[in-house]
Image (cartoon, rainbow, N blue to C red):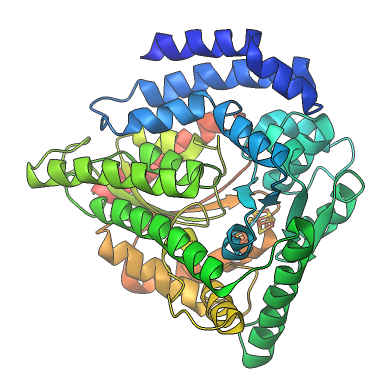
Length: 437
Ligand code: BJ8
């Protein structure tokens, strides 16, 4: 399997995909370098794991072919007159995009590769997620960005919203205003934003968002959320049937794969994981220290912390993150009714996302404590991207909330580079030793 993947990568780079990437305006030389770097990392971090569920084959294939088939699908959709709408945040209501027959695709970038080019323009003391996203556009190395007709930004944090102003010089951008509070006035503002977004998407696509289409899109996205909820539930078992690294990549893939196909594949993986649980089988011994990671999202291919933890003798059993529980814990009520009634239900659901950009944000603290209990964790690692001030400041409250419950916490602040991997490993080792005592 491992060698086949590397072989396939080489073949793809040299054949038909290059034509497509060239047509999309991709910088082929840089792009080759990116893909050539990714394949051995995946092989080392992922394919070397023991006793992986067979259902991971699909996700291995999707990552192996990360800029291939899925981009081709989006392109075919575009060539048939369809639109592709790219997003950077779980606040953008994908129901509306799908209901207008457009395809939503999550763009959040998780690689150091695109950071240096972004630093030619953005301040270096900007979070890696913002720099990586911006660098992909500037360097023309992401076919998903190149395929999209509209990028939807949001006003969640200052770094992002100012980056979107710069990104708008390169690609059409629409920015949704996400409020900072959760009172009634903020909820009204958000509903107005959701209604306005529907108009924008209808104008872009030339398609009306109807009651039936919106209800169908809601069900489709809920099905994917239900599948991911089911997967995360299997991680509550002891021994755990799937590694944290594998669960993380499944969630990462769900941001850009076809919604229905992804739900189906996640459910197939869950069938297998549940059988493992029934048979008492797991990927790590039952007494392996169990870790909840909480904090900034880990966009693909950001696997650094999971890898360090899982090669240091722990297992990650849950991510309280937007590439984790915040993405799928809440369903949109499938209430039906008029378009306005459905949009109201959609707006309400999105306001339940407890991003650190909100103040106050006590619900996130409650979530972290609840998840720590539900997943029976031995410790929490608070993951903070450097220069992300919202999560860094909120970590103080997370620390207090966990201390009150007697749950050990390790606070990590890092970026996408590997420069601090040794130091992180030392801190993780010390944390795990402390948990063991
Ligand atoms: S809802 S977490 S996906 S904004 S890490 S860019 S906050 S400086 S990613 Fe996020 Fe939406 Fe919130 Fe979720 Fe800014 Fe912080 Fe960087 Fe961040």
